[in-house]
Length: 328
Image (cartoon, rainbow, N blue to C red):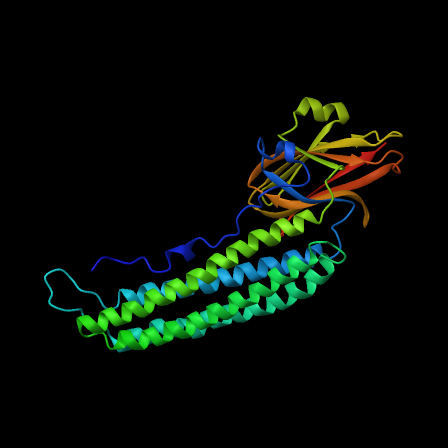
């Protein structure tokens, strides 16, 4: 019989890129290395908790799906018909037992982590969408993510049942029955996976739509050294593969002015770029960053107190690079 690539759709569970960026759509089709999700002095209320819980849920569900996919494929190939053979190669019950045990040892704990993250996501959603027109839709989408956990849980139980059928895989009809159980489970969990990825995209769009269009930050291609030098002598700081290029000094004046920065990220992920004096934010932005370089123009309000401020680029992974700018 032909090989079946069981659960192949679960091999790429990454969250799709957001469908739009509210902060600077003019650059999105030209230079999409950074997709702002908020801009201001600090992250919106509930943003960080929402993002963290959302990311933890996605990671746990991706792990559970990968484990289930691997178990399904290993079960499939534990009982095969080879060329010129009259029947299937009998499955080894001990091998089946070891294959299925991965569901208890790794699959269920991953779903437990997803459930814990979902509880945090539900709580964070209430604050992140407080007073927003999208609150009802977001609440429904978050609730539906719990249904996906339930569907995956049923998938694990059905895979365990399929394992019992594969232990009896000694004849052609028995092999067909075992494979049929896998195909049914592939269809049901596949539907849950499709629902989940759709919910991811909806929540991304709903959350981004809660943020005001950015007026304080502009995303650009890398800013030339000549243009940075117009603002002040350039300085470069690097750490963990990340790099910041910025003017050492910056004349703020009486009107708002755009502070030029170049950022190079060593990896894709969620990131923040901030300009602060101590713990007080002056201007900041957060969102999705791709691996590579991009430029930012960050608005420093006119009349901002002079003196040193800290410019920071930070990935959610922990990679952080900081520099000092003297406002004049």
